[in-house]
Amino acid sequence: MLEITDVEAGYGRTRVLHGVTVPSGKVVAVLGHNGAGKSTLLRLAIGLIKPSVGRVLFDGEDVTSLAPNQRVARGMAYVPQGQQSFGQLTTLENLQLVADGRRGGKALVDRQMARFPALKQFASRKAGLLSGGQRQQLAIARALITEPKLLILDEPTEGIQPTIVAEIEQTIMQLAEEGIDVLLVEQHIGFALEAAERYVVLSSGRVTQTGTGGKTATSTVRAAMAI
Ligand SMILES: Nc1ncnc2c1ncn2[C@@H]1O[C@H](COP(=O)(O)OP(=O)(O)O)[C@@H](O)[C@H]1O
Ligand SMILES: [Mg+2]
Image (tube, rainbow, N blue to C red; front, top):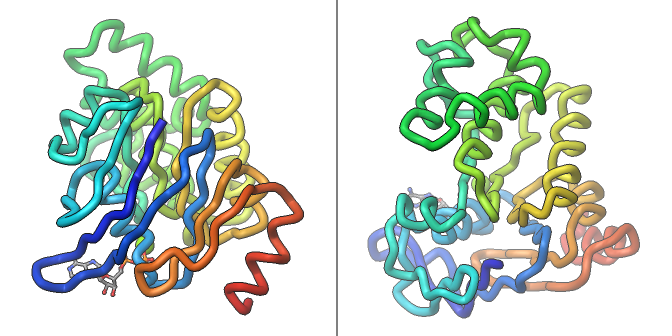
């Protein structure tokens, strides 16, 4: 379980997050307009940036000063915004890259291929030639090969064709059922709140609203965000 408490963080002298606290939960949604600080908060969660104030706990351990790889070793995984993969490598090679050196590496790859049939189908295709949705699935599959307890997802459905959006949403629900916690930044507020146990709304780097997820939260959040 992830706990982010009262963090201040930013880039150089620019402070982006001001006293942000994120409630813990099995699926936690982070909502807010562009530039609100959502991606910055996720980078902070995985350790790519460090807070000047506040702390990050994972399963009760203070990980605030740990590097991203140390957090991954403890069971955190992160999928950045933008469907990143190694375009010149095949789908399979992208997965093997993460699996190499792990115990049961091949089984880990096979398990994710089974989860995402499109990745199995296009195993030998260069990742750069996959559709945006398939590249997103590949990025999620790569993260899952590390067998995380917590998956951090930054706008996994951004810019993706609707049929695959539904598949990715299903995957997120399925992961939660499998007992993997999810910290999710998502523009599809209806889905995010349906999936989420807790949510926070960020505005200009501050939490302006927080609450319990579920379908009924949608109208409250939409009103608060004026959309
Ligand atoms: N690498 C960076 N260097 C400097 N400023 C950044 C960087 N990334 C984001 N910012 C700034 O931080 C603020 C929050 O950005 P971001 O966390 O990406 O918001 P969101 O994900 O909610 O759209 C914005 O004002 C943005 O310009
Ligand atoms: Mg962002």
